[in-house]
Amino acid sequence: MAMVPCPSQRLSLSSSIKSAAPHQICVSRPSRAPRRPAHLAVTAAAAAPQASKALDRFSAFDRVSVLSEALPYLQRFRGKTIVIKYGGAAMKDESLKARVVSDLVLLSCVGIHPVMVHGGGPEINSWLNKLGIEAQFKNGLRVTDAATMDVVEMVLGGRVNKSLVSLIQQSGGAAVGLCGKDSDIIRARQMVEKDIGFVGEVTSVNPSLLQTLVADGYIPVVASVASDGKGQGLNVNADTAAGEIAASLRAEKLILMTDVPGVMRDKDDPSTKFAALTIRECKELEDQGIIAGGMIPKVDCCIRSLSQGVSATHIIDGRQPHSLLMELLTDEGIGTMICERPL
Image (cartoon, rainbow, N blue to C red):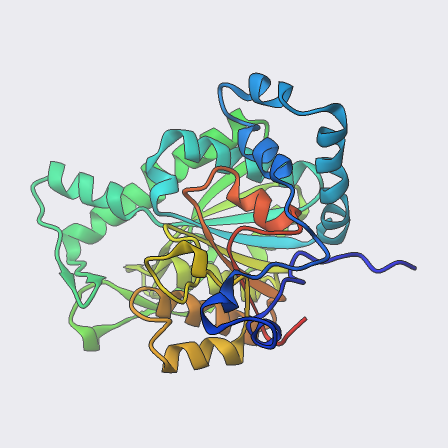
């Protein structure tokens, strides 16, 4: 039987070192899949208002080639669960939001099981401002007093969550909106030692309700609000929540949608993005200070998920139209894939 190509089979850091200068290490792409701009252009244009005009620029062969390239990935991931952490600019831009939603529905329609986990920091800040409550942060974490926690639950579990559910259903999907308190999906402990109020650290995940929904063909949409087991809601990091949910579901993939192209050697130069990294290489890059700042918790989240059984993790730029489909269904990918070992 012919081997089915996997989108995770990209050139890793270790394999590229042999043939590239230090500044070129992270820009290499697999030789087996030459870039075909038409594929990416067609994919990116699919949901745009000018889609029909854009598609007219490509031949029938180009369009069929897109499907041909995607087919092995669709076959490989059919019946598998993929957890997507949704946040950042893709939540604030309505056109990007619509494309993310259409991507989720497409994946669901072809037999892949997406689970969305979301935050909503900008929306929380907006409502705090409307209610005259000052947003406060300490060491990068939101200080969540009782009044702020009420707003967090209201915004994440209500306004943001239900708007995403509505969009998915308007696009032809079947979604169920939840927060981590429902059925005790996410249990957390309050991080009292940090003196930042009702902020939690995830301690356990109960996946049974999510498994039931996925098996019945629904797309779960989970807000990153947890329970402390005693009735108190806790604000938890959405990346962490997504990672722990992915691990509990034994997901094929965890995808973190961010506002950067991926892991980069030079954070200001997208051309230095790593296409693929192993856990060991990530730790080396952290020691060198290349993975730093806000990228550290995202990479650590990926590593923890891998150690708990998730097959592959990805950090992608949610600002790019249809980045989810390009990462999953094309040879080139668009972000940084992190795996336990070289593939």
